[in-house]
Amino acid sequence: MPPWTPHSLWKPAVVTVGQEILYGERANDNLLWLLRAFVRYGVPAAVGLILPDDEVVIGKHLETLLSLGYRPIFVSGGIGGTHDDRTRQGIALGLGRPLVKHSECFKRLARRYGARFTEQRQRMAWLPEGARLIDNPIGAPGFCVDHVYAFPGFPEMLHPMAEETLRRLLGSLPERGKRALELTLKVPEGDIAEEVERFANDHPGLDIGLYPRITPEGPMVTVRGRCWAHDPSAWTQVEGFLRKLEGSYPVAEALRELEGP
Image (tube, rainbow, N blue to C red; front, side, top):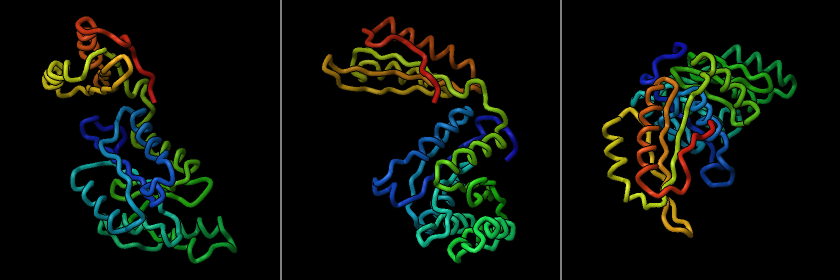
């Protein structure tokens, strides 16, 4: 994928793999970190998935994501060599590519593990045909093939590897990837739903959401508008609409700009 294509051409997807996540045994910090990383670059992920350690399930979901035009797809977890690491196999299935021994990956792993280069660790060198390696200074490499990028699940490995990959794909970090304004009103969401929906329909390129809650003081709703680096004019439109709401309804929290992720 070439560096920095127009925002409308990007539909990133983030996939995290692991039974321990599905069972609720571990917080899905990798998913949250990856989603925030895409936001920082001004290209929010369009899909975030949690999948089990099952190559058939992984393969079917990747096949579907690619067929629907999601690119790039970042996958975290399950690329090791133990019996329950099934991500390499799943990616190969989803892409219709055989698993083959990657000679350079095998050499790197052999140097790293020496006499401890067991059969299980050797499995990590079997990658989808045509895969390119993603450097990992402190462990086994990740790999990329056909717009799918596979990373280890260890945060200390994932973070620098994914950050470097995003930098290669998107260039330098924009000064502001995302900006957001929000206003909280002392009304139920239904009281302003029609007005907000009309604004959203009139401005289909803008991102605006309603977030209601019940408090001891009664129902409240936060209206949040998001703007992206590729469309600075949206900021003026969102701000103008929220200021109109601010002057028309009782305010719980005044209009403010949110800090980025």
